[in-house]
Figure 1 (cartoon, rainbow over the protein chains, first blue to last red):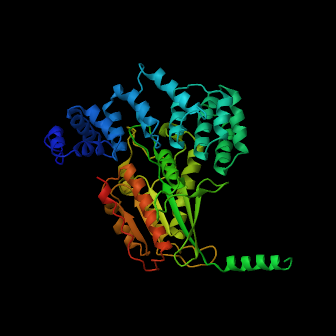
Figure 2: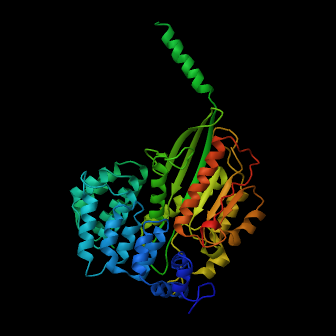
Figure 3: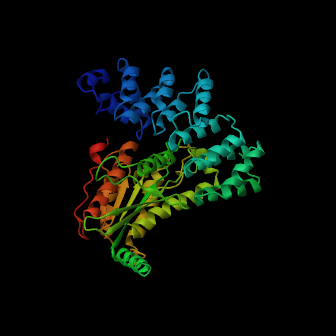
Length: 213
Length: 270
């Protein structure tokens, strides 16, 4: 199963070069399913791979380490990733956590997401990228936020986050649920920048023509 | 005193209008970054990360891909005013667009807003090719199909129809048309600051596109990748290219026949 460019065993290669894990991690994206599976097998062979990947989160290969954690399905790392995500402005930690949600940890993850998203001045504010990932996850899992909470989020954020709030509301509105979210669409129709208004206009047109998800 | 004040203001206005103004325009278009067979689409996140970096404070001297300000009513435009070494004013403007309506490919295929966003991002790219000093595409190569801003064409088994992209080359053909068209002149009639840059920050873009693009005859500096491009490297390279072009403009080290900006993409990719 080894490809031509891969080392004889990933473990041996890691002993030779501390970067060997990242060579495998790079093959997790943009390659064929076969190459990806080989890379996963090689990563699994690395002793204490969990600790290694956690250490790498503090370095320049952070994004690759997160990709590897998601590909290996290391659900035991979710609590540590939730801690790490607070300091990660890229939002990628939250994408990795999303990939590791199981019936066993979904409640903890979603509660954590909600409290971070809605937290005001007493917590470190989330980056726009992190807010978008969280809003998408809450929408996908149909975790309900109130119209008042959405309005407050809408008023204090950049246009990409406003776009994510509209997408969140759209999901419920197109299902015919929670008509109170129409308020957010109307708020967006008069908001800046124009991209937000355009998105709201498309949503209204969908609702008028009775599109359903 | 009363007569002196209007004279003082007049002098100030005359001085301000005599300062030479130069413009440097970038167009950055994130293509539709699906991750088939998964439903995930990543360009929304990549764009946000990229813009986050552009608007953050500069931490070092001579760092230029930072401290941009977003336009109030068009969130895709960012601006920064700089002073060049000879004292003239340099206005750097950047238009950054992403292509996907949401991070879910299945949902995007049923969303009319998706078509609109794909068109906006493609227009940003193709207009940039004719007008901007630097136009950068960050996205998929579609195995030679070219820059792509829409959900991919699929085969019966729901995998990307690469065979069709190789044959039809839809994105590459549109790019060639834009390259062969007459470049737009600057709106204020001024000359371009430098030879335009075309960046294709997508997997193996050198092998897939460079020969065809050079044959188009248009004088551009091509920035391309020899290998697969990991997304963080793509973002870093985009930022580096912007910084380098602005540095050249600020130090006035650039002319129409500028040397290559030599950003080595392959060094940071696999």
